[in-house]
Image 1 (cartoon, rainbow, N blue to C red):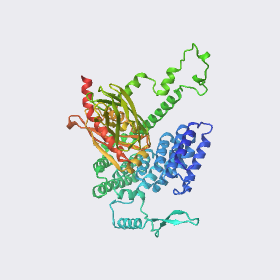
Image 2 (cartoon, rainbow, N blue to C red; image 1 turned 180 degrees about the vertical axis):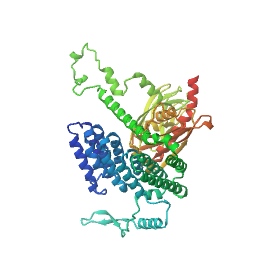
Image 3 (cartoon, one colour; image 1 turned 90 degrees about the vertical axis):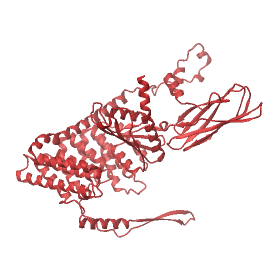
Image 4 (cartoon, rainbow, N blue to C red; image 1 turned 180 degrees about the horizontal axis):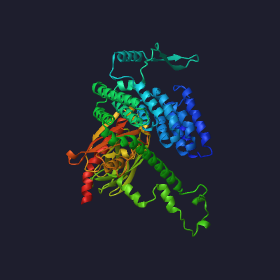
Length: 626
């Protein structure tokens, strides 16, 4: 199917029915589909592009995790796609397989070293270097890994030289001569109009032969430079006792020169990530001390060589346990009604049968019809959605019960005549602010003295943003023949009615974060002293899902987490929480919450929601204390 949504549903169904008997056939089919995506053009109608390839790689990853016997047959096939747009999924899969299956490490590391020059993205290159630094252990692999990394880096310095400037000027000229698209209307042979798009391409220039890893460093990726220093340091430490002394000394000297050149690049290059400069200097200084100072090596060698793998293994174990709990929970859920249960139609039963019988299904029918199984929750929910529109001293008292159901808002307005006279042509005139449209306006009513009536209004919502409903009651007193009007209080529609918790992968979050243009930055000001409690409060208050795992026993002065949610209209909402506990600020939390979305409404509305929640914390806590 050309629709990625249909493919996603089909893959979800297929993954649910995979067993040990059919897993090999499923994997073969998935591998064939992945290979077909490379032969299709992304601009063709049949191609699903990177989205479909990513889904296939995730499905293969899931099969290999659940059924270890197929891991070996798929890992080498997937590594051929490390240079495609699904590269992040591939390297995450490879990283997990390398940790879980020791027998496959040698072949996977060899394949990874051969594919290192094909990596196009900086994040994937970082993951590749981490794998090489953690899992290269024997002499041949250590030598090959060190030579490959240094060869891809090239000799220092890593500052733009004359040759590099000429190469960049050529690339800039090539970008200026990129294919141009011209669209025009043409008349076909049958007399109909059509749109024709023409691409004009210039001559393809000669390709730059600079290794991709060197390009990334020269362009100012300081974080990647820190990882290179860490990788080379680990390779030198693991080479002790495995590689001969002369070769080890050469590896150490070359590593020191490369790390010094990376720090120099970070200090000089204008396009460098300036915020990472201090971290890069501190980390590379530590690596140099480990290689030169025997005491520092004795203290830090175990931490550098073992703690990383142990932490990653614990991370994989936690993920596996979480998935097992979710699967067990799904299996334990018993459906309230079985598929083969009888359906009782009360209207089709004869009166003789019904006579004297007590219908025990009335309670359950009412619960299913209203959507509530707890009468207390029903009353609480209703009261929280009742808005007072006019005052008790006004001639007409009005209040509204608001029901929000995805795209529709239904207002049930109770109107009470507080005067001893009959009010004719009483109408509630409503207006909206935001992406809301009134589709059914309240009808005029004639209300007797001290009488009441209920009118309805329907509003259609088209996007996720905070809206306001305001209006006026207009009436005519039949006794005095005077016309009157009452201005109503605003009804504030909360964005939380449209936000639903959702999940996505880390690479999908990063991709959307880079793509979305609307950002709202909120300064943290709260009375909560604990980092995790503050994070949990934000997650609960914004109805979002925390994508960053955190343990309750974790202790620290800094916390960063990514939150994700999706609206009922399919719009994505991304939130990044960066908070720290400062001792010079009386132990109060400080930091920022950044919200990004494709639309301005979500970014602004979520920012207002977070600001309101923070300001309300102090009052809530003081009330509880009383």
